[in-house]
View 1 (cartoon, one colour):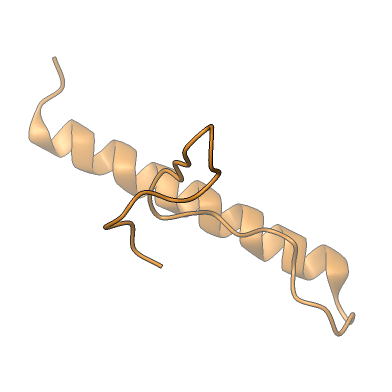
View 2 (cartoon, helix red, strand yellow):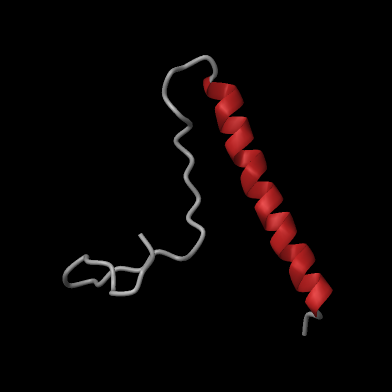
Length: 60
């Protein structure tokens, strides 16, 4: 079982890792006019298998 400060540290490390990936993608694409092709989602993306429509209440 993780204690709260371990959970916070893990979340901070994950966010730092994602930032590093975005920074690296930006540095490798400079000086291109297109933005980096890295776009982490802040929440899991779920879709309906039959309709491929996001469920109601999903932030857009």
